[in-house]
Length: 611
Image (cartoon, rainbow, N blue to C red):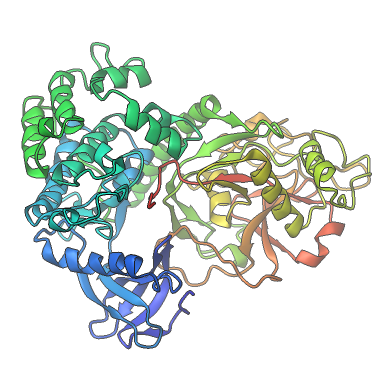
């Protein structure tokens, strides 16, 4: 059950907006009535609150956070059980910034100076927890937040998130010896978390610290299977259980990055000492592992002090960019988009059942929509009111996105196997070429195709094929540099997009025939050819003043849905990345301009494992 916006919760907090939703609960931005300050209000899912074990896990997050004496742990302001709903809740400080995982995914590997700053703060929080006999058990880059600092002379403040599955060491000793303590994330779990009867100690967190440092320096994962485009939890667990961690970090990095070990590489001078430190973090023999986070930090500090480099700073997440800085940021984003598109051509994978190819669209922040006010971010003279206001969006998770719209041949395989009725224009020669995008597909038909493909492809770990959200679609089309069209600022031409083909001879073109019109991430035909369904119900953006995280409007089941991209007969101004269309669900089968593009949904990272 989601709380209604602008309602009063627990007589203390006014709900402002939804911030995030996860397996255990929901997080809202809420105004604390007594102070007027915005807080992060976390509530537990009602159906899970009936489970005493899960309820205890939720409630202990408040208790543990209050005991650890470190500014690098998220401050819990208040916690209670709502009398009206019997829902446990806690109110925390509201953080602005990004996770370490987002920072690594969106940028370059951390410099040694950046690593020093992150780990000094991280190990302070974890070290203070260890002094109290508390083990986090789920340390990973997604649970390390780089928050905007309260003062201008600090680049960021590290905050350790999610002590909800932390374990008191003294309690662990009384746990039944036949229980599996494997609570954590497979890519970062220590061997003892997977063993019956093994004790969980501070050394369990040290294992994760070593793997996090490797990830921060290389942008890759130590476990080879975690670097696969479609990673699999069981494959990662199996590798972590059997692989020899005696493989030095430098050797593993050279295996994954061919030139990493060559003379002149930025990490060349740190590898010998880092290898020794890493070996002690991931020793399978507990007696050979650092005892706790404080000891691990002292070891890493010694490594970094022996490998000096000019100081480097992360861009501050606090200050708004000036006009000049904004242009520089856009230029950097264009360069990164070019590198990403090139990398995606190498990293694309093909779904074997239909032959659809997918490219990786990473997490990111971008300006969604348009402005009608000159000299403001996102201004465009052709902007329509339904695409305003321009507003910042942050997508914390990447998504594999189909390189092309679904073709008639691919949709035909679905029809043949399911016996579903074909769309209205299936027999029309203008529209039924095998490599043309399918048209006339209803919203329900698009969802049915995704469900069929998910079942037939036998995806693991809960991943599925789906329609993109509106935010995911626009990010895939325009990237992070605010471009007007997928290819940039140049006005549409027949070489870039299929559009303006009105009259009896007009029709969509074969997919992929205009490579010059690709988006920054390598997606084709996102402007023109066919409109594409999005998951979101139609609605205005509203008066959006803050950065929205992973927004999605589910709407009523029968509400019109958003379509994006323009079609083969549209005017060029409808091909802009920000332009929005809508269609009623009941009318879709008779319209020959709308098709679909699918995404493969699911994080690249392993998520919580709780046997």
